[in-house]
Image 1 (tube, helix red, strand yellow):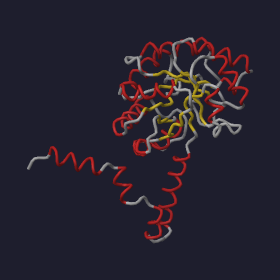
Image 2: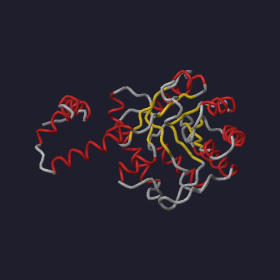
Image 3: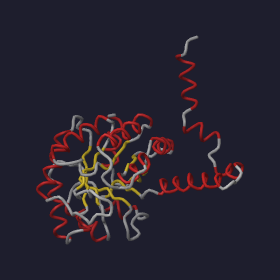
Image 4: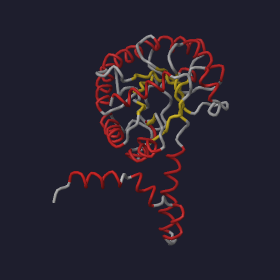
Length: 286
């Protein structure tokens, strides 16, 4: 696992901006590995839908996430960063969460400051207090068994506070021992420039607005080292499964779907057929 963590740290330390693959299960992680993505990101919302078919509310627990992460890192040699929610509780819970996720092979663990809703469509519950979140981040850093594991402070302060107050929080988080800041709710280029000036830490962002996604030069110049471009692969996979099953249910011929299927060679590469044939030749005795 240390090699995957070394690759993740290398991406954080370079002056350019690395595009991460937003994956949602072992299969998508395997494909990202085939395409030579250095970093994969597993978001909380898509992992819940893809693996449990539930919406993004508190119906999942730490064990669910650990199981998915373990299956991903077992099957795909990728540097996995994931959304660790709020650490699944207070600072003591965060300690357990970090240890469990680290043991599952994760390279980077996000701990966010937003209070998770207990009911679907519940009114925004805001953020944990600065003092509590600082304690949780310090606990996450202290909980690591492998010093190569990266703890990321995920924050939505830019969407909730004035810029000055948001920067004060980001500065406080930056002093906890975390090694990256994840910005959620980034809205403008001015905000990103201000955050870059406020923290020495590398920044990661998901789907930045204002045309920033395609402006890698601007992102890199303002400290963004890892960019997540949303979850289009997940949305396309959902649509493809729905369309194929509906087509068949409506009486459509199987042959109509053939041109839209992965060909035999791609399937063979995805499921690692040749690798397992080689294992059979090497180890099976008759």
